[in-house]
Length: 103
Image (cartoon, rainbow, N blue to C red):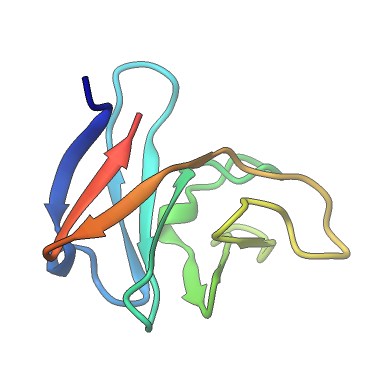
């Protein structure tokens, strides 16, 4: 059985923006789309103060938290130095213009 779940069409995630996938347990997931149409998935909670990363600014392959500006790499969820910490990541893929998430 596949654990890939269809989330939305790619164009439902704004370029340089995010879309939130709500979960009943375990916290929400933020799907990010960069300028190159790459899609990444992180736990929608900053490792610093718990801010909603989905409301942050996407730049390149990073997102900056809207509360205090901490930046996280979208591919691995790690904070960018000098900050220390990480956010959980989730597997995501795009096929035929549709976004799938592995939960």
